[in-house]
Every structure is written in structure tokens, then in C-alpha cells.
Image (tube, rainbow, N blue to C red):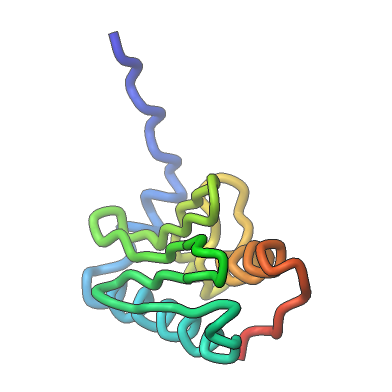
Length: 126
């Protein structure tokens, strides 16, 4: 018999419910656009990207792909890099997306995973 999922933490429910659809769309669009702007600074032979319908796909020269996308039903940003994936809630106090489990920042994690994949330091976000 399957086990029931752990109930959401009170703070996560409060953060997600504080965002109406329009606010979530604006914040998630801004997040995707900022990451697309940052990715535009890379040599496309090393790291290219595609953006469509709330999904930003990072495409590396070796064929690997990382994906950043909005999840409207949960009002979260999701990021998958290699075999790992994270879910981010909007933190209105800090005005950033933070991981639902350990609280790390989305932007820092994208930069870290891209740097690890490329084997070098990467430019800071614009």
C-alpha cells in the first residue's frame, strides 16, 4: 500500500498561496528572462539555450541538457541538472526563489551546476 506524501510545511503553503496567478506569472517570467539574458553571454558552441512556454532548456556542447521551468499548479520554479532536481518557492521577504528543502537560492544553484558541468568559473548574473 503506498504511503501518503508528507504534508506541506506551513511556511511553504503560505508562500505559495500568497502568490496569485498574475503575480506568479510575472515572477516566473522575470526569472526565466534573467536566466536567458545570463545564458546569452556564453559561446553557443559551449552552452546554448531555448526558451518556450515557461521552459528554459540549457543545451551543452556534449548534448547534455538542464531544464528550468515554471510549475503553475504548485507556483514553483523547478530546475533539473543531470540526475538532480530541485523545487523552488518564492520568498517574498528575500525576493528570490529558494529551495523548498534546504533554502538555497535558485540563481546560485544554476551558476554552480553550469560551472561544474563546464569545468570552469562562469560569469556572474547580469
